[in-house]
Length: 234
Length: 234
Image 1 (cartoon, rainbow over the protein chains, first blue to last red):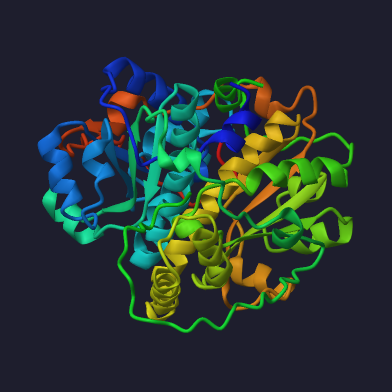
Image 2: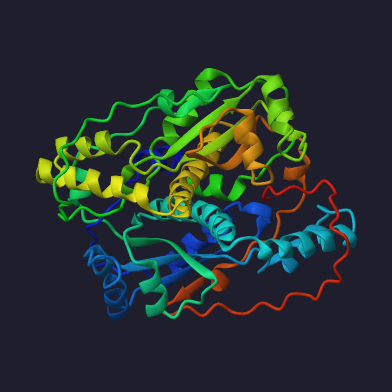
């Protein structure tokens, strides 16, 4: 499928068929995901893929009981490794082998530099890891759509609860959840009109940064209605 | 171009031709970018696009003097708005208008909830903004490639210096820099073999999180060699 079509047609889907996601399809999708760029090519991402109904129930318990977590063929916990140096040795060995670096000293210097990042404030490494891992999550959604597999990104969950439930080590940051599956033909998500998007003339600034203030309606705020709205996008 | 080809063929490019990036091409690219999903569809991204040589020089001064910042047709500062509620009013009005919400009370409750996020620690909103903005940056790289425009993502820069230089308000977080331009036919980036990528069997974990420890060569670390290596990916 044309990349423009994938970008424009992709919708976040909550209603999936019962068709399972087989190993081969997941392999195909993640073979694409691995090509995602990352800072220094350090690839800090990990994916916990839950297809087992019981495990999906466990996840749902920490995801505001959103029913597509168990209704999807797979629920994925997208994790960022907050240790920048986790793969530094092999990554820079590879740079040296392939002629991206002039000599072993330079390679060692890079390893040293990235190992030094371990001393940064945890929040810095959390932002660092989120940045590259989100790039991979975007690739995942596009690669899945190409295979006919819809997705729904979610940030509405309790990260600490998820970490504890699945015994995820302290150094890993749940960046988002994603559900994956084949969309119902009449999924409500795809039947409704597309949601508002900010146009290029608003989000792009040439030569100087001049964001326009946007008049927000003075909402009469009532009690936070829970509704069935979720923190997923459209 | 097929999305799989774009994902697999895209390379980060440092060598660009002198061909400028015209308004129409940028418009086409950003018309795609706007479709990126984001948490609650809040679209916290902004893009400062520098085509003017003098402005590129100013940016380069805060980006470790990397020469593709001025050699590219455009250098882009990708910014995340750390105010989650910046666009909440219109976004949830739109949900209500299009039948995604049952009533105005629910809409008001959502605005209230997102406005409440303003009280979170700044670092939480920084992570929040980085997550969605990185998704948009990935879309930008793919959409650009489709138009024949190569890119290079960079995290090697001084964010505070960039903010000060371009008078960027305190609430905006520079998430990454991207250079954009038409690639030189013999760009060294595309001539060399592709860099190592972690394979799916390493990064995907089924039903339980069991990252394998990776033996890193015990590097004899020398002084940090600056070399011409940058924090960009492959």
